[in-house]
Image (spheres, rainbow, N blue to C red):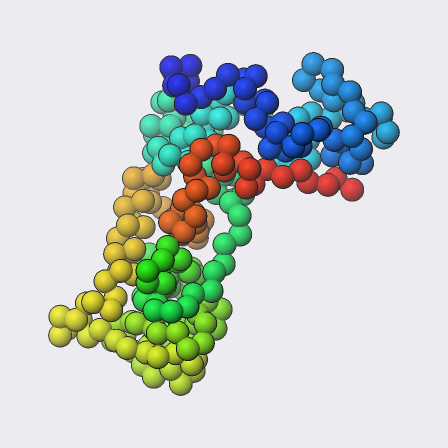
Amino acid sequence: MIALLHQIPSEATIRKELRKIIFGRNVFCPFCRSRHVHRSEARYWCTRCRTHFSLLSGTWLANLKLSLRTFWALLWCWTQKVPVQQTQKLCHVSEVSVAHWFRQFRLHLPDFDPILNGVIQMDEAYFSSLSLVMAKQIGSKCLAHVVLPKPSVDKRDATEFLFQHVEPQSNLQTDGAGIYKAIERWWPVRHTVDIHRKFQFGRTSEIEGMFGVLRTFIRRMYHHTTPEYLPEYVSEFCIRFSSPEIFESPSQYLSKTLMPVPTC
């Protein structure tokens, strides 16, 4: 089935792309950084430290057991938001393997911890035993979030979120929940509220819409979630929304995540 996908290149092409992403123009030893290396089939040998290494040595894919085409197909499915069960059928691997690799792709996303400014909408949502606080900078794709290991959010949680993610003097828009009452006394923001019982929704419509999009993403991509993986799913969702260019292709994703790791 993988061979029928035009999006999955040949193994030789994938190897060439990986070599360019990891090493640039010239291959170097990931152990001593020397460029005095010789190639023997799929392996390399460093003449300085006399170490044998592979194309993926020193990266988080060093112990890859899959064929390169199967790995590339899994990564393509994940970047294109192909659901787990569809990916399983397409790549001819077990659901356990798909879940494992999708998680590896999530865990190796670049760090993303923005500070918002301007006009910001902030709200909270609840998932079983966890709480999610999220804010969106209006007029941009910037999202900030925190997942709390408890079933409710209090004023301290809300103010700590502001300390970490909202610039002073920003315009903060929230609903009329008690946790936001007089929050401008704790952090210098210009605070306005929607009162939902008065059918006021304009100041929170975008952030509430993001919660709906998040739930749809989790349901379609992963079918369900558990407290263990919810923080990862939310983080992935926020990065997908804020930095969609990372997910344009496997090459684009790997160029942001697959850097050689010094071993000494």
